[in-house]
Image 1: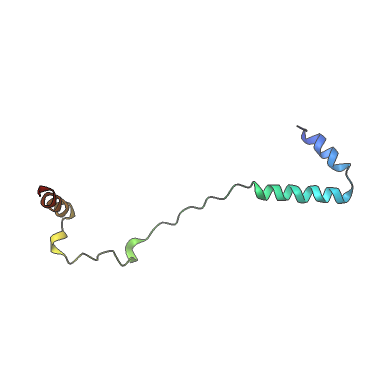
Image 2: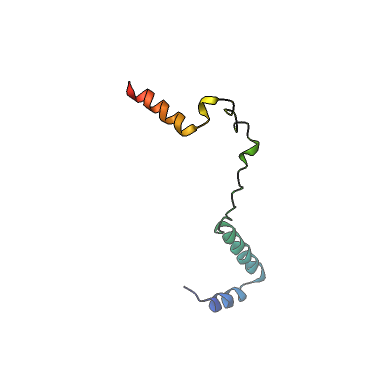
Length: 78
């Protein structure tokens, strides 16, 4: 593999048009191999979602843990 100095010298000896082609090709390669920028996920705001509180008027679900436990016992006993 060529070292950076040798590569710079080789490019400098090329005609002006060929040097432009080298620059264009290097820019192309940089685009092809650039790392995608990771975006931070936006925090979710459930407060305004329509499903929040949809069962708030159900008295049988005031204690969700007890409700699930009772449902499982009922369904798994049969």
